[in-house]
Image (cartoon, rainbow, N blue to C red):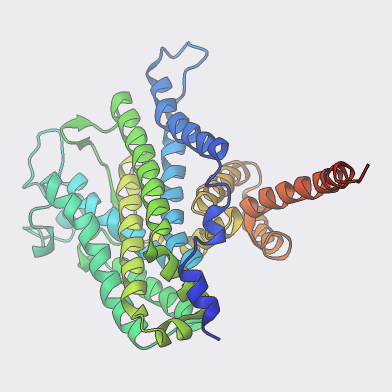
Length: 389
């Protein structure tokens, strides 16, 4: 009875092998990331050049790559550990707010003592205690990782220890995100209330609207996305990744074998939250605004749609899904703004019914059909060669 789990722990997961071990596929993935890193440099060309990339496209590329990073983070817990989170928008927004505090304290005169406008409006005379040190870039980066990690650890520890699973866990994550959004909407919390953070001017002393800064931010996002993909791919090939797969398939049997699944799930959950927080931190300076709607339940559900569309449990699938869905969103929200949500819902239904393995699964299905068609001719040739004279 326990043999299937034992066998799973001694082999590489089949979902990980998909399009990952083939040299050609690896080269294509490498070329894709290289193109994402180099493409923003076209924005530095003269505006009249045929290869010139406008600020709109550079910003859109950066935003979609941030979404791809948070989709990759969600795939870690949903695709490999089988834990569906409908609240990853919270960690995304927490990372954004942590870095947004740093950006709000940067101004042309570099006067870090100047209070933001929303604090002046509330007649505050000093920063709240949790804003201490946020004028320092290094401290802001620490908060970007530490705040989502701390929240994820506390929530995950009690949820996993209580053995909350399935739809109940998903509902709780959504409820937590909704509660956090209501909290951040309040002005007295010190995060700008309904308006949130905006009006960013400088980052590391550079003008945030300058072409060179936009290019640097977009390239940094591409590099972070590439290294996150490579790191997670390596991690999933280790025993840790195999244990996560066994947790997804049969956690009770794995516990019977002596594994403390709580800490495996918690480690994946915290790592996923940190990646989502980093995505939020990269998102804020490129978009230029952050408010509590970013941690809304709708955004968190969209993240799950990205992963499902691309193919969960594949790492490359969520990146592809986030790119396809958000590119379509950018078009349809302009061309047909009143029906975009209907299109998104229809996409999720189609993927669920006809593409359960997402776009990556569709590619695998096509490959298998080609192999099946080629198999009969190969078998015939083999039989003919073995015919006695």
